[in-house]
Image (cartoon, rainbow, N blue to C red; front, side, top):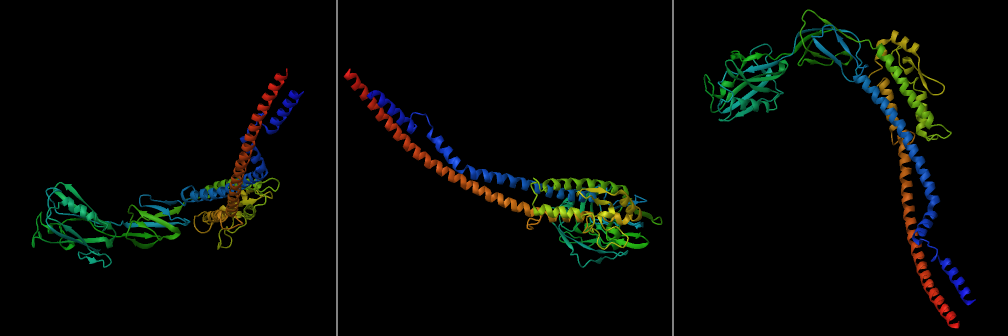
Length: 484
C-alpha cells in the first residue's frame, strides 16, 4: 500500500509542474505574451489596412487627374491639337506657334532678303601650318549701313586676339573661336592656298573689321608671315569679304519689317517664322489648319477619360463600403466634376463665343457620368471654329488650364479638403499606428522574457522535485524489498 500511494503522489506532483508532460516553457512564454497583446495588435493592423486602402484610393484618383492633365497638355503642345500653320509657298519659310499660342487668322508673307552673316576669307597662305607673325588682332563690331565705313557698336567691346611668334594660321582660327565673341573661324584649303575664314552672326549690326598691330607688323604693304596680312577693312577690301552682314527684309501682311535673324517672333497669334527663301513680288499666304475633326476626336477621348475618373470616384466614395466614403477630398472632387461642364474656361470670351466645356459638347448625366453632346459640339464648331480652337491652348485659360488647375488643386497637401490633404492625413495616421505597433512589439518582447525567466525557474524546481521523488521511490523500493 505504501508503494502504490507513493507512486501515485509522485506522478501527480510531476504533472502539476509540467516536468513530465513535455511542455516547451519558452514557447509557452511566447504564446502567452502574444495572446496578451493580440486584441490590440489585431485592431491596429485592421486599422492599418483601412488606411492603406484609403491612401491607395486617394492616390489613384490624384494620379488619374494628373495623367489626364499631362496627356491633354502633350496633345495640345505636340499632338494633333497643336496649332499648325500652312504656307502657300513652303520654300519661303517654316512656321510654328509659341507655347500657349492660339494660331488663328490668315496672313501674307513676302521675303525680299534673308538675314545674312558677314564672312571674310583672308589673303592666301601656302598652308594652314604657316606662321602668321607675332602681334595682336583687334576685331571691332558694328554696322556698315551700306557703306564702306563701319559704325562701331558701342555696346560691344572689341575683341583682342593675342598671337605669338610660333602661332600658325590654324592656331589663330582656334583663338578666334575661343574668344567668346560669337565668331566662327576655320582654315579653308582653296585652289589658291590656305585661307583663314571668319564668320559672324546674322544681322546688319554684326558686321566687323579686323585691325592688326605688333612686332611683326609691316608698317606698309604686308606679306604672309606679318600680322597685318590678316587685317581687313571695307574701304580696302580686295575680295576678302565673301558675304555682307544684313537684316532680313520682308513684308508681313502688307507691312514692311526687318529682323536681325531669320527667326522672326513678335507676330500675331504667337506665330513664329523661320525664313528660308526669298519671294520678292510674289507674296505667299499663311493660314492655320482646320482642327474641327481633331477637336471632335479629342472631346470623345476627354469624355472617356472623365468617365474613368468618375467611375473610380463612384466606387471609392460609395457610402456603403467605399474606402473613401466619408473622405472630404473625394467629396470635393465629386463636386468639381459635377460642375465641370458649366465652369467658365474662357473668361473674357466675346458674346456668342464658346466659354464653357458645355459649349464643346461636355454634358453630365444624373449619375455623375459624362456624355458627349455631339449636336452642341458641331454647332459650336460650325459657328465659331476659331474660338473653339482657341480653347485648346497651354496658356492660362482654356480646357487644359481648367483640368491642370483641378489636378493641382486636388494634389495640394496643405489643403485638408483636397485629395493631397487626405493622403497627407492618412499617411500621418499610418505613421502613428506603425509607432504604436512598434511599442506593442517591445512590450510583448519584455513580457515574453519575464515569463520565460519565471517558467525557467519553475522548470528547475520541477527538476529538483523529480530528483527528490526519484530518491524517495528508490528508498521505498529498498524498504519494501528488505521487508520481504
